Length: 242
Image 1: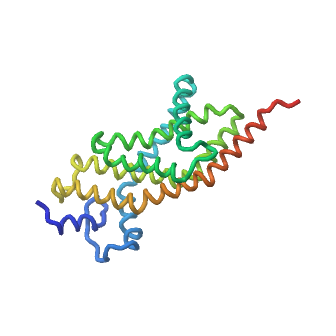
Image 2 (image 1 turned 180 degrees about the horizontal axis):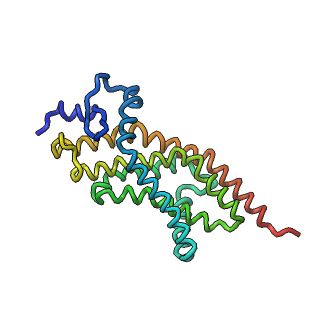
Image 3 (image 1 turned 135 degrees about the horizontal axis):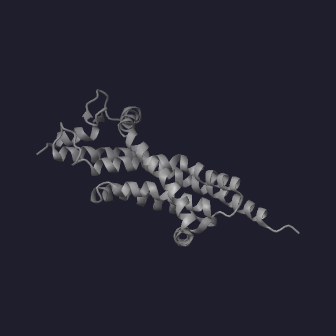
């Protein structure tokens, strides 16, 4: 059975180019985490993150196709999504805390449910926002150029923080789910699970959670104002002229 020192080493080691833990001379610190640990995890998971980003784009295309060919189910799904927004406080009064709790709950469940779904849950988390975005783009009844503008402006502000958090968190969760199937050969079965779990904790504490908290604030303070402005603009554009 691995000793406590071995577990401690796995928790403070840095990921090398092959995904294995390696010892560094510098002591574990906040500076080292952002200068060495996180960049190493990003490099090792870059292909997986690109794959997940591709699924997000596929989700957008799928959402557009669903809205075009199956408008009735699309409207039902969007009404359910709107009801969830209302439960969080509605567009006019939704709070940063409500969005933060909702997003953190979804992402914190990702590592746990990834294990039970063999990595499928993180893929679902990454694809669903794209599907909803594609559906919303089709449902907005206005001029085509304005559709593009609305889609970009509604996603861009908080998406700058939220999308990287989803990509990185989903990649780490999938690595945890696959730790028994694609193990690091230098580690035991227990060691592989502990190593993957340590990376999840490190990535979530220092990257995913701070990004989601920031995204929640931006979504209320910036995106919410843009949404209300676009709604008022759309109302003006669609008012019949005398």
